[in-house]
Amino acid sequence: MRVFVTGATGYIGSVVVDALQRASHQVVALVRHQEKARRLADRGVDTALGTLGNPNTWRQQASTCDGFVHAAFERSAKGVEIDRIALDTLIDLAQHAAARGPASLVYTSGIWVLGATQEAVDESAPLAPIDLVAWRPAHERLVLDAAGGQLRTAVVRPGVVYGGSQGIVADMLKDAENGLMRIVGTGENHWPLVYDRDLADLYVRVLTAEDGHGVYHANDEADEQVRAIADAIAAHRPHPPDIRFVPLAEARTKMGPYADALALDQRVRSPRARALGWNPSLRSVAGNIPRLSEELRRGRIARQERQDS
Ligand SMILES: NC(=O)c1ccc[n+]([C@@H]2O[C@H](COP(=O)([O-])OP(=O)(O)OC[C@H]3O[C@@H](n4cnc5c(N)ncnc54)[C@H](OP(=O)(O)O)[C@@H]3O)[C@@H](O)[C@H]2O)c1
Image (tube, rainbow, N blue to C red):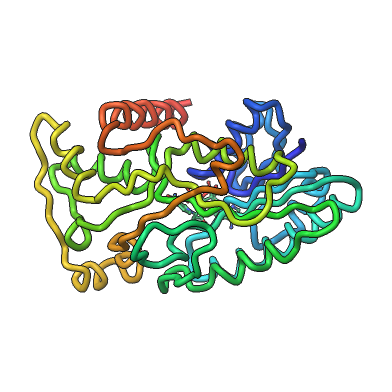
C-alpha cells in the first residue's frame, strides 16, 4: 500500500510511519519543516512539504496514495477549522483513490469523546464529549459517512498514549525527575492507556484488513488509576518526588478545559480492535516504569543527537 500520513513528525504519526515501513508499505508524509522532511527522506519516506490548512501544498503527492492516515492536529485557535479543511481534502482524495481500486482512510480521534464512563464501554457507547473535544464527533461522522464503493473508512480512538519520550505519561516521568508531580483531582480516576507501538500496529491492521472499517477503540484495557501510575513512578525514583493533588477547579484556572480531560474517569474496551487480531504487547504503565524510563532516556539522547547533527 502507498500511504499518505499527516502528523508523521508527531507522537502518534511517527510510530505509525515506523510500523508502516516495517510492514513494507510506502509512506508519503506531510511535513511542514524542511529539516524534518530531510530526516524522513533519509529513512526512505517520500515527503510533501506543506501545511494541513493549505491542501494545495500536498494534494498532488497525496493523490498517488491508496491509504490515508490523518494523525496531525494543529494546537492553535484555528486547529478545529484546519482539521476540517484537511479532512475534507483527505476524504476527497480517498474517494478518488477508491475509483481506481481499494482505498482506506483512517482518522485519529480519541477516547475523550466518550466522556466519563460509569462502566466499561466499547465502541457502541453513546458519545458524551468533554468541552475540549466537543467538535470531534462531527469529524468522526464525516469520515464514517464517506465510506462506500471501494473506500473503507475508520476512526481510531486512542487512549492516553505512552512510550518513548512524548505524551502525558512521559511528562509525568519528567515531573518526577524534577521533584514534583501534579495530579488533577484525587487520582482515583482511571485512564484508558495504550502503548505507542501497539497503537501503531492497530493503524496498520485497520488500514490493510479487508474488513477494517468503523470505530476502533485502542487501549490496553488495564483500567489503571492515575494515583497508581504516579505512585509507581515515584517509587522508581532514588529520591521520591512530592505528589500534589490539585483540585479540579484550581487546575481549570491554569489549564482550561484540558484539566477536565486529565480528571476523566474512564474504563474503555477495544473489542473491535481485538477482532482484527490486535493484541497489545504492554498492558500496564505502573508495571513498566523501568522500561518506560529507559525509553524516555533513549528518546532524549536521540533528540540531542538530532539537534547536534
Ligand atoms: N498523544 C495522545 O495521547 C493522544 C491520544 C488520543 C488522541 N490523540 C490525538 O491524536 C492526534 C495526534 O496527536 P499527537 O499526540 O501525535 O500530537 P503531536 O505529537 O502534537 O503531533 C502533531 C503532528 O501534527 C503536525 N501538525 C500540526 N499542525 C500542522 C499543520 N498546520 N500542518 C501540518 N502538520 C501539522 C505536527 O507537525 P510538527 O512536527 O511540524 O509540529 C505533528 O507532526 C491529535 O488529534 C490528538 O488529539 C492523541
